[in-house]
Image (tube, rainbow, N blue to C red; front, side, top):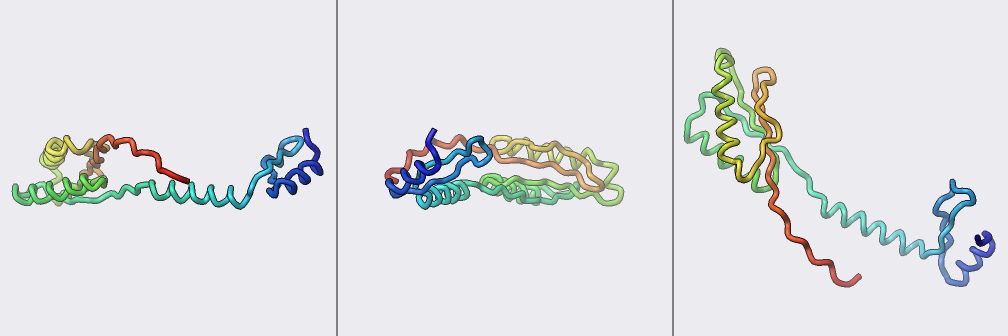
Length: 154
């Protein structure tokens, strides 16, 4: 165990800083380091972590139970492109009036969409009725990423 005065003297001799690491410990723990370099490297690590972080957006596609085949295909291709971009997709079937009696038609539409997109997506939330809307959420299936080589130099 080195006294505080001796630690200060060692830090001055090495042209470094004496940094208190754990002030709550008994006795307090200090480290001799270049604090400016430490701070710079920690900021750099944080910046790299933010750069690698990927925000996942949720896109919504609204359908009606009496949708035509061509309209369904158009919506299907839009949903497919959203999933390929890495976004989640919230599919909503909107029921009006007496369409509420035929909820099975809406569920069949959502099941068909999930079935046709099963190669690039997974069902995150199964079809569920919320008020007059039936909602299902699809998440993209991420392809396994290849290991990236370590960056050269420091």
